[in-house]
Amino acid sequence: MELAFSAEDEAFRTEVREWLAANLTGAFKDAGHIGGSGREHEGHEIRHEWEKVLGAAGWTCLGWPKQFGGRGATLNQQVIFNEEYVKVNAPARVGHIGEGLIGPTLIAYGTPEQQERFLPKIVSGEELWCQGYSEPNAGSDLANVQTKAVLDGDKWVINGQKVWTSLAVQSDWCFVVVRTDPSASKHAGLSFVLVPMDQPGVEIRPIIQATGTSEFNEVFFSDAETDASNIVGSPGQGWEVANALLGFERGVATLAQQIQFEREYGNVLRTAQANGRSHDPVMRQRLAQSWIGLKLLRYTALRMLTNMGDGAPGPEASISKLAWANWHRSLGELAIDVQGVAGLVAEGAPYELTGEQALFLFTRSDTIYGGSNQIQRNIIGERALGLPREPKSPAR
Image 1 (cartoon, rainbow, N blue to C red):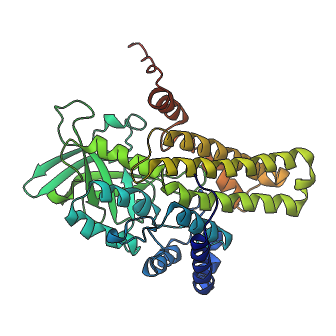
Image 2 (cartoon, rainbow, N blue to C red):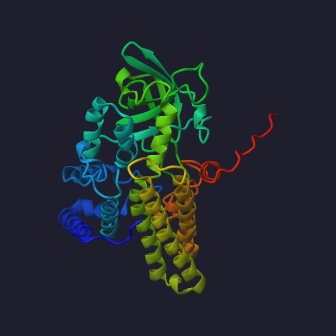
């Protein structure tokens, strides 16, 4: 892992700074304070417009190969872009699921026709994506997926339910893990399909969270259709493709995540400095520990990305997920504590929360979604350390 930046890297940094200074103005600049954890619904339209501006100027999908619309940027350059992006408090990105998850997966597993159809509109920011993995009885146990897809002529017909689908309301497409062979073993019977969201067979029901908002949704498929060509990989290869995508989610996609973490920590620090609580020795120590933890997250992510090369991260990606989930949850607690008693009082009736309160409530879920802490520890133990598998609970 190389932490120093070359002259070429610094020239790239100057290019990023100059472009942001020239383009991050007016409503785009004003949108920099919205869209944080638990508030992803805020200012979606203006943030989507900003995504398109980024795409038109070549600032999305930086690390993608040039033949797929990216810049072929080095890891250092991607880090630099994210550093400069957070320094100017640019708007929270809305295209990260397309850029960081399904895009790299289509580059690795998609057909030329799929790449030609979907990748350009991810780069441009025109189309947004959501993830159809979890179900009421298939969360961490993804292999228990029951949503079914049946090939009917030139269409896949899909029936079932997905849950905890982030940003489904705003999305144009969903990548969905479905069961296409009920007779096969749990893993072998799964496939990975791309489904348009704007059709009669798709119903989205927002899930109201503790934050009072509904980033998460239930999605019901009732004879929903997608073209037969919209399967990624072959039928029965869904488990492999789905796990590769999870690797990308915990890989380069973490660089975009660092933007939000830096911004959130900065807000907490400024609050503590403004109200004087940063002078309290215990609070000052907690702020310092949080800052140290944030830097360790960055170095952990960089080491993982350096080791992965051009492929998807291995089981070490679970180390990064375990680290950031616990750090972010602690930051939510710190965000409330730096406010003292004021942090316990809502901003307005009946349930208007401050950004810090929304952060606290949302981060309680960090150690659960995307693979719980227990699952991450199992992966680290079994796949990274070579420890025996966890014993199964006896049947009752």
